[in-house]
Image 1: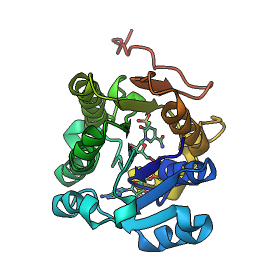
Image 2: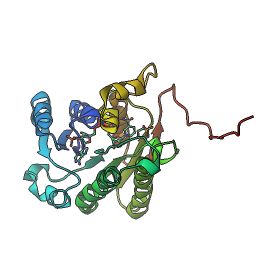
Image 3: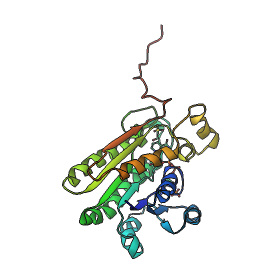
Image 4: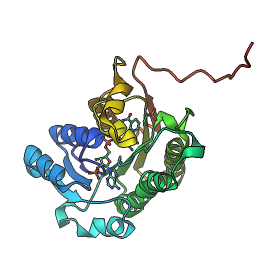
Length: 251
Ligand code: NDP
Ligand code: 8X3
């Protein structure tokens, strides 16, 4: 079956890999993100089955206006991949910058809410659709410095489960994908604003790759309509949830 898929954050990382994979699989993709040059490059690479639409998910008016602004034959979006998101910093909460926290909440929480609210009514009216959100293992397992980022991803996980509760009785599906360490994206460059520090995160760790996330998206949307995968947690073979921390006294 062929779908019309809208991806937020398709200019890099998972979003771009997913756009490439899904067009290759025969779907049509509306690729969104803030960087127009990246969207144009993707459109040039993938041809007429990719529609490039600049969108900042933290702009509520632009997000709400998006469905009606699409060309008529692209408006019936079957699959939303709510992927745009970011982490800023890895310091302890008492050193956190409110501006960074606000931006993570606006993007990872507000952005997911806005685009879901914009596209879900059409899916329910057509009784056909699938919302795929990008959570993280950080929404389940706490780690030092994960503070606000992890909390935004816990929000996404619970929002996905609560959407499922609302959608039961419709044919619309919902899946939260929760990856661990994934290299080959700009995630750590954005988090640290320092390319060397970013590279060190993945050194000798054999992390997952954006193609693995694209594969997961392709898998969950391609399952028979009776199957709803509620959540998928995936990690590289080299990673495990950290042991519980114990700070011992000296001596
Ligand atoms: P990247 O930094 O490579 O890509 C992030 C994408 O989000 C970019 O396309 C960026 O596009 C877009 N984006 C950021 N802010 C906005 C905004 N305000 N409006 C629209 N688009 C925006 O990250 P990843 O591909 O690694 O991450 C994708 C998702 O997966 C995120 O939600 C992340 O939290 C999550 N994740 C990542 C993991 C990892 O280890 N990499 C693991 C688990 C989850 P542009 O700048 O052009 O707007
Ligand atoms: C990204 C994975 O472990 O850096 O969500 O939080 S992690």
